[in-house]
Image (cartoon, rainbow, N blue to C red; front, side):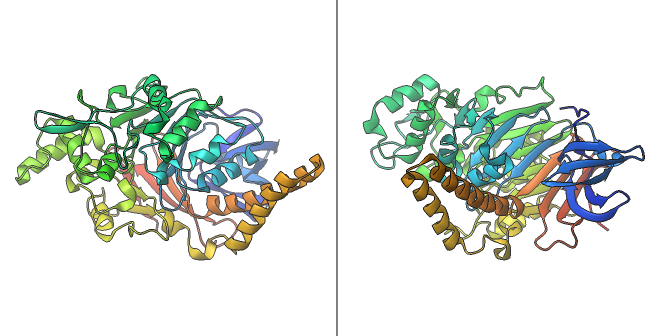
Length: 484
């Protein structure tokens, strides 16, 4: 997206907004790619702009005309949620967390949803609530529209803890009741006895009934690319998993393992930059993908066999930035990590959960098998400290609940409007806290990358972000540039 006379974007890697021209009185630190509304231009190269809720002055050489690729790994607590904004200003979601954090973040990001907002795609990587639950709140926002919701074809059903029919072919067991097309989904949902009170099925029913959702279907390796993002585009999004075989999806031994293991796996390519989003992949699924894509034994016994497998797998799975699979679970394949070979890894996890994510051996392996001398590991959980959590959450929740009750009980339009304004102020307060602390921000022009998180305690008004730069070296290979 090009700039115009009325707007532009912040240049690499960051800039400071000043109260007066001449670098006097820092107001705000801005990130590379932040959108600027241009209010005034001076002949000496200083521009008066609006950005991040502030007005101030910025030097012309710190402005660029092009929009970047942006990913925000939102702090959804225990779960996953990622917002993607493309260089063409298309908006996509990959998972939505379990509760209201994604809704609050997007509400803050998009000005309280006062204007219509369209998302090209929502990808629910697999049917675990910490990945899909937050979509329900977004479906209730009348100004939000979704071109298509994608799932991995697995839907829990009755009898209890069933993923549907299984068949055995050539000694291998498969889930054969995969819900692939929209027609398959309609047929499945038509018999409510098969899924009544199953949360993921109920959500898909809500998706299908919404007049603001264009479609809903399975996404797998047979699609090759996310629709609208094929290799002919500047930004391509490859679909690497789940791997659907003629008999169905491979049974991985347990309900949870099969649901997680057949997560939708995406690899984004923008210029020379590659980003891998692997859902909740586990070791069995990673080995299966390694075997399918390379045609080799995924668990070779010799050192030479492992070397050849990694060499064959890297063209498919290697990434510069990766989202850690399954929140840093201990159930991972070292060979898959070595094939991924990222410079930076983002772990999405939360407090008060029983799995102890991220686990120590996973963090150690991510560091050991990362690329470069100083592989980077980011964590939404660590980026948002207890100090910067929402103050007095129980009081805030009580106020929010009361605002909703007042809206429902209001007898006049004016009273309902006052309660709605009170609700909006509270939601904005929560959303700002989530947006500021915990989110890991990625920006790229296809050649360079920054990863940034808000500092818990700013050094100054012009030093609010902790920024890490990835730049190409003399040979064109991307490297982390340590700060001096």
